[in-house]
Image 1 (tube, rainbow, N blue to C red):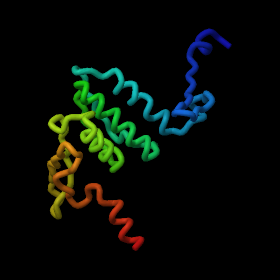
Image 2 (image 1 turned 45 degrees about the vertical axis):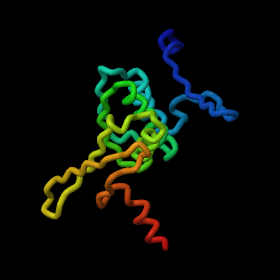
Image 3 (image 1 turned 90 degrees about the vertical axis):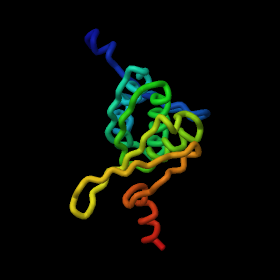
Length: 155
């Protein structure tokens, strides 16, 4: 084994209260963990002079992980980073809403834009407000409605 190989190993372990795991090589953990690690590092080191463009932070993550990454995004924004995020997950959006309610992010520092098209394929931009309790001002068709659509099909 050469010297470089000895110093370039990465192991991942989990600890949550009384639950903990052994250390695993990154090739032996879920793809979501590997995908999100660079994002976590960027969010942790971001400061007031940082601009982050994040596309699909929820990719390959369990819904609970999606909510946690939303909380981390909110904390980075609270600390002054400017973040433009394009989530496709209600868990991320709802995680941001919870962050506002819990005071991790000021509602004045958040803009929610929903992009859609009209029948003639013209772009529409819906500006959605949020109050201090995380309540949204509007739910345009197609925004956070898939759960309800699927549940109504099950009834």
